Amino acid sequence: MVRQMAGDSVNLAYTGGDPGGGLGTGVASIRDAIDRAWSEAGVAILVDLGGAETNSEMAVEMLDAERRGRVVVCNAPIVEGAVMAATEASGGSTLETVRRTAEELSPQ
Amino acid sequence: MTPALLHRLIVAVSDDVIAHADELTALDQAVGDGDHGVNMKRGFEAVRADAAATAEKPLPEALKAIGTQLVMKVGGASGPLYGTLFLALSKEIAPDGSNLPTAFGKAVEAVKARGKSQPGQKTMLDVLTPVRTALAEGGADLRSRLPIVAASAAEATIPMLATRGRASFLGERSIGHMDPGARSTALMVASVCRVLED
Image (tube, rainbow over the protein chains, first blue to last red):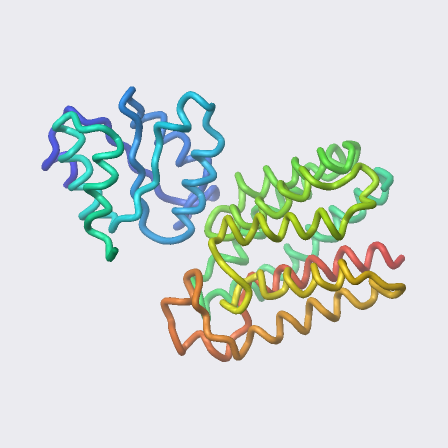
């Protein structure tokens, strides 16, 4: 859905599943997804439920200092946030603008 | 802290969590997404497999290794929380463990920050906090008192309303069930104290 709306100019990655391959979340696969989505503009992460958020935060903390400052976990609904963020990103916006766009959708 | 004692501690905690996986799953099915038992079992099987090597390390490094294993292998909501507990403890603990009350206090603060939560929300913090207080107060019979403090604290989560984590989505339906994270924390406290009593 995101790819359709934002086109090919934006690096995208998704991940899900726990370290055992079942339903859930895990730091290692999130780190891989950050690598796949990486570009010099940075990465905006959108998550569904709480476990994904804390695992994402830990994945970001494990990045080297150079990358860590350019990855954010957005407080936004995952579907709408991802679509809005990707659309914003495809227009060449900065990471901070992308994050703010996604987070406008959350109750303030 | 000798490698032999550390090994017994690692094995006891791991074996107890693994043995109670079904119970943790059942608790989590009642108030969460049912993955606590499976996740914790997977994490502690990895910790258990490395027990011999981990026990040879100085205490801070051993705790760091355990914390890292938990972060990478547990997943779900508990992986980052238990991982943070052990990783923070590893940063603060003296090699001889003599500052445990202070180090444990800082580790509990780290868990609060990681989970963005406070005691009273029906989480593992509701066991960690009274255990931290009891450790800070000290006393002669700490090893026999701590498991009781932890178990009572876990029981006390039963009538609580969950306002944090997956269980909070259930609202009033979270009342009447023990929080699974509280139970697993109480289990681990009991395992550690049982080994140290022997």
